[in-house]
Image 1 (cartoon, one colour):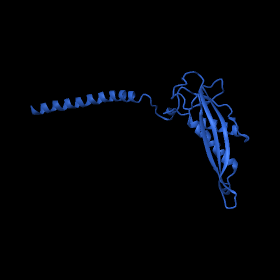
Image 2 (cartoon, helix red, strand yellow; image 1 turned 135 degrees about the horizontal axis):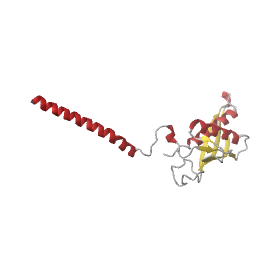
Image 3 (spheres, helix red, strand yellow; image 1 turned 120 degrees about the horizontal axis):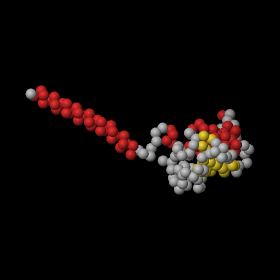
Image 4 (cartoon, helix red, strand yellow; image 1 turned 180 degrees about the horizontal axis):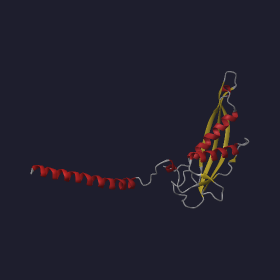
Length: 193
C-alpha cells in the first residue's frame, strides 16, 4: 500500500512539473515581448524601418579646394551602400533626402622641425548635414524619427594628420579626412537611442 501512495505522489509531482514548464514556456515570451517591444534584434534594428531609400544630392561647398564636394558626395554614397540597409535612389523615388554642406576646410601646421619646415599638418573639415523624410510618415518633432535633425541639421567635423617626412601627401590626408567625415555622417543615420 505504501508503494502505491508514493507512486501517486511521484506522478502528481511530475504532472505539476510538466504543467509549470508548459505555463512558463507560454508566459515567458509574452512577458519579454511586452518589456522589449521597442527593441529590434540584428543590425537592421539600428536603422529606421520606415525609410527604405535615400537621395543624396551633390554636396554644397563653401571651400576653395577643387573637387571636395564631388569626393565627399562619392564617399557618403559609398558608405550608405556599405553600412546601412538603405538604397540610393533618384529624388522622385526616394523616401528621404540627405543634404550636406561643407562649411569649412583648413590646414594648420601643428609641428615644425628644427629647420622650420613643416613636420605635421592637421587637415580639418566641417560640414552640416540635414536628413529629411519625404513621405510625411514621421513628424519633425519625433526625436527617434531621424537622428540627424531635419530642422537645424547637425554639424560634423573630421580631422586627419599630414606628415610629409613620412612620405604622406596632401591628397592622401585630404581623402582620409573626407572618408572620416562621410563615416561620421552615415553613422548619424542610425536611430537615436
